[in-house]
Amino acid sequence: MIAISRIDHISLIVDEIEPVVNLFESLLGFRVGSSFERSGYIGIDMEIPGTKAISVEVLMSKKNDNSNLALSISKKAAIHHIGLQVESLSSAVDSINDLYLQTLNVDNVNQFAPFELKPRVDNEGR
Image (cartoon, rainbow, N blue to C red):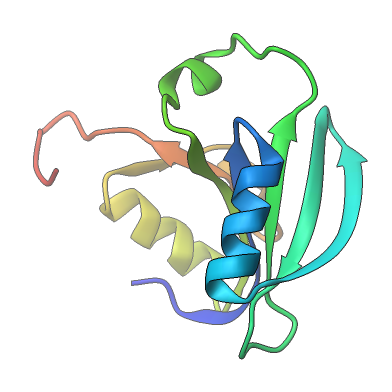
């Protein structure tokens, strides 16, 4: 298990921003924050009620993305990424690798370790 020190944000990628923002705002009481554009995405930050400085980013691609990642996400909303601080990044990378995920760019494990779902070759887990 990863020892999390702090969660900064959870980022969702969606087909349409407005319906997701409306749902979070009207059903869950999330507060709409600033909108932004970066790295080929438009997005809106939403503050999660009852938390301190934890937000949800709702992202939508500015272009039609035919990448393998986009094709593998066939839902209306999916987790894009989670920004968090961990007690030990090398331990977190080990935990991720043990849980049937594969880290990318493990050479820079002192700062940032993106990862993706990669079923293990021994077919254990689900």
